[in-house]
Length: 619
Image (tube, rainbow, N blue to C red):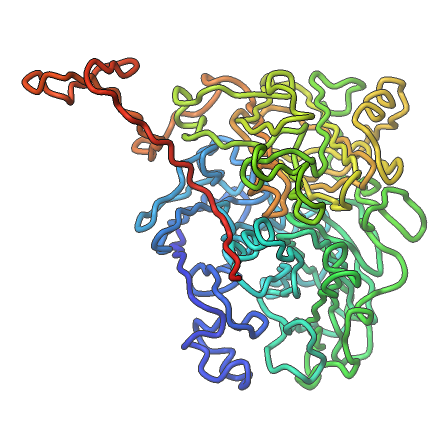
């Protein structure tokens, strides 16, 4: 059992003494150096990343989350675990549990059911963006590992946790971007919570870099995790070495040797690095793409790969953004679904897991989910009467990322534990005219238990190039098709293409994943077997996009298929009293009754208060 606490210190606080000027001080307990900039963050057990969790397959994991945030609720999602039989532990506020209140403890208990490289992170607000995340590794005995003969070491210290990083709290950046024209581009990238600030070169910063020690001649298994939070795919490479990809999102694939790979937010890759070069020190390089590229912030980062016995120095090569580009073969290339000798899209990886019922010719249930940044009067950022998105200048327009033109409004109480408190839900056939009006509702897709489900994710690409990484809770899916059709595509064009039999599906050994991206102006099709009943969130893993409702809830099965709610499980919801009002004081003015309020005396005035976040810029 592990006990974890969340609190809100600052990067380089009192615990750091002379850090970053004195790099030795950066190693002190509770010192979170990050990139050396002072800014607020959210830590778990006063460290970032938070404590790694290493368990064996089929272990029972017990974690007590103590919320010390003072005024913020919290939660933890176990990213990559399907929570079969422990649906109440998935950690999604308003879907599988109530938000955990400050000053309380929530005990997560679940079975380590699917081995592989995963991670845990807060699923509340922007806490993941500010440091509330950590590694979660479920190990198999070497003799049962399908790739056990391919590597010599699999060390806990060989985890590579990547995150794009902002110079201030994410909520400040969110409010500034959505209400004051501020940027949403990350300044830099962190590797295991460490790195140089933006604009600094080899010897110009004392902020410590992450170091990985390898042994000459051995084959080392490295576990990569992307805690990416913005539109910043990350290209990863190691100077002088090639990498062999052996797993993605915890599922084994046939080995693919490559010079670099691109990892998107929420994805994980296991790779083997063969330490077969001259002993010395080498750069591990991470290059930010899309919103992090040369058009915007030039975000990049390095770590050191050091052969044991070599001097504890950094490589001689000066590093800037352009120096982090690695030519040659690449796995999961950005915005590209074509397979060539130099490019291996994720859809071309071959799973080692045997084929299953998802290999049938036709799925039982099919959904087309298209998305883009839509020009609608999102009430959180525009007002139809006073500052409509159609009436303000282009640079003042806040476009809204949505699935099927609908923004998810989370229910007031989790339907998993409080199904009777769930009010109306919606889908694209019931939400109204969402092409012209802003639609926000509890977007739910109902799926029969046991169905083979096929999902088409369609990136229309008419506004921004944004390669959204899409994550499904509760399941791994087979990636059966991926294609880029052009710079833009309509939903109808993809539907017609599918109906005409022009979508080639891969139904043999298609890769198993739980997070996947879609080429702009294209589609990705996935399949899963709906055998895990529950209420499962599907969402874009860019924090800002999920926060404004780029998500859907998949409801699999019925109430009778779910395990019983744990005894004493927290409940939550709103408060709307029902009173009988009378003008006669002797009759009392606080008589409760069921049903709607009956106003029999003086007029009751009701003021609706809508709580939201705005930004006031100084004049």
